[in-house]
Image (cartoon, rainbow, N blue to C red; front, side, top):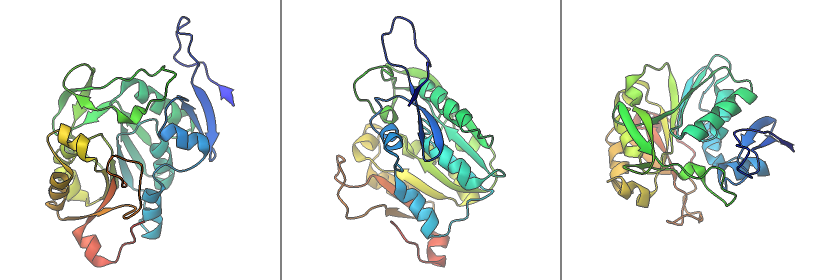
Length: 264
């Protein structure tokens, strides 16, 4: 295991980031991140069922565009870049400034030229928001992917709508933004209606309620766009507050009616 001397002040007395090679990809990681980083370190695919869905349903991703909203350290982004190939494009959005730097590092370490990284919070407005800032050098376990959009006490970051950009041939959008999903979808209505992509969306009721929504309201919002919402890993217990998998796949109604989908 090779250590990288990244982002350390001489007086911090903290361990540096570690470089890990897992599944032929290289990552600069915070060893104390107990979610996505743990899966990389242990060599298993985080939220594997999303990729299983693409494979089992023969979803064609080559040469397409994938939007990764809530990019974190780039774990999914790197896999997405290989799914779309050299002629495809991945746009990944990460509001936490420090994690954005980590994301860019991992994209660079893996030699990916088909990825565009954006230090932005995706929302229903073009402007500015505030995002939580964990202690990134804390030796205790932290889930850096759990940072939320807040009204005070965070760091200001640019916000934008997906509809403020023009994309080509979007095959799916992954949205994992700690309860801010309704705002992302509201600001992406034109993009969704134009491309009719699959949506991989996290439903976490207590976080949605903090943002003025709920699981049922988010489901209704997506269904209003003529989508079918199906949970991943239905009936399988998970160590979450609800006791079940938090992620759903949202399928355009016309695709749902065209052929029978397999939901892992």
